[in-house]
Length: 489
Image (tube, rainbow, N blue to C red; front, side, top):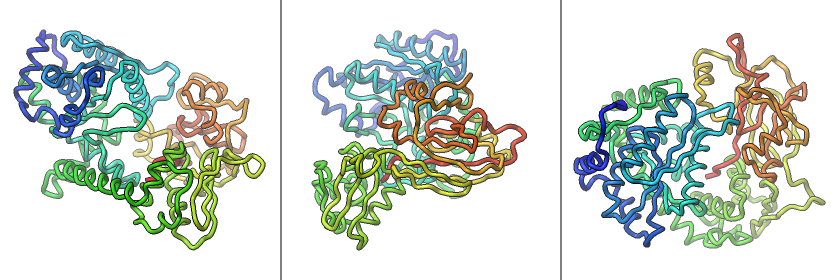
C-alpha cells in the first residue's frame, strides 16, 4: 500500500495489527530476551524505522505491546538522502508516525561529504547512527525489521563470498556483541507477504522505495529473479528451507562455541599465549573459532584476512617449528610450544604496510596479512549495469579503466597524498578524507593505496576508485581489484 492521504488513527491501527498476528507477533527468542531484561533503563529499545512495510509493521507491533512487555521505545530514522524529495518524505512520514504513537524520535542524515555513495556505505552509515543513538539514549537493544524472506537473500550473498556457520546463521533474531547494543529482529519468523497483507487489512500505510524494483542491484535481483526461479526449479519454497537451515546453523554455531570454550578456554580468556599442542589437538572448526575470539580480544581481528587465517592454521598444524606473520601493528609468533602476540619492535621489523609492486593478473599478500587480487576483465553490459547501480562494495572491490599500463604499486599513506574518488567534486588530501571518514591514525598505516604508473592514487579500499579511472561508455577493458582484510572465520 502506498502512502495515502487518508488519516490514520495509529494507536488503533497498531492494536488491530496486533490482533491479526496475536501470539505470533514477536519471534519467540526475542520475547525470551526481552523477558529477562532488568528494569529501566535496560528495557529501553531503539526501533529502526525506514518507513517501509517491514519496519512500519515492526514499530506498530512493538508499540501495541510496549505496555505488557514493559518496554520504552525510541523511534530512529536515518535519511540516506539517496532519493531526493522521496527521502525527505520518508523522514517526515516516520516522524509523524512516531508522534502519533506518542514515542520519542531521533533522526540522522547522510553527510554531504559522502560524495560517492553505495548501498554498502549506506548500511555502514546507518548502523553507525543507530548504535550511537542507542548508546546516547541508553538503549539495551536496537530492533530491526528483517523478516523471514530476508534470510535466503543474505545466505546466498554470503555463500558467494565464502563464510562459515556463523555467517550462514545470520541474520539472527537475537545477535549480541561485546562492544555494541544487542540487535533484535522480532519479525524474522514472518513472511513478507503476510506482513503486507496484514498492514493492508489494518488500513496501515507505508512508504515504498522504488529503487527496490531495480534488478541491477544484487539483492533485488536475488529477490525478484533468482529466488523465484530456484523455488520453481526445486518445486519447494526455498525461503522456508533457508529459514530452517538458518535456525539449525545457529544451533550448530552455539554448540561449536560451547565446545571451543571447553577445549580452548585460554583463547576465550584472551590469554597472552595459546598452547600450540592444544590448538593442534582440537578439530579445525574449534581451532578457527578460538583463534578468531583470541585475536578479537587482542584487537587484531580486523588485521587478519581470511587467507591469512588459513595460512596461520596451516602453520599451526604443520611440522614447521617457527612461523611469524604480521597482524596490523603487531606480529603473531608461533614456535614449537605456543602462539603469542608480539607488539612489534621498530628495531627488528616494520610495523605497518610495506610497499610492493604487481602486474595485472597477480595476487599480492601484503605484510599486514591482507590480500589484493587483480585481473583484467572485459567490460560488457552486465558489468556496466552493476557498476552504474552502485551495488559494488568499495571496501572489497573496484573496477578501473585499464589502458594497458603496468607497474602498479601498493603502499601505505604518505603525508601530501591527494585523492579524488569517483563522484567527488574535486580532489583533496587523503588525510582529509581519512578525517571525514573518522579512520583512526593507526589504521591509516595498514590501509593499502593502489598507485598507477604515473604515481596517482587510484584506489583506497573503503573509497570508490579515482575519477580519472572511471569506466566510460567507450571503455572496453577494466582492471578488477579485490581486497580481503576481515572476517577470518
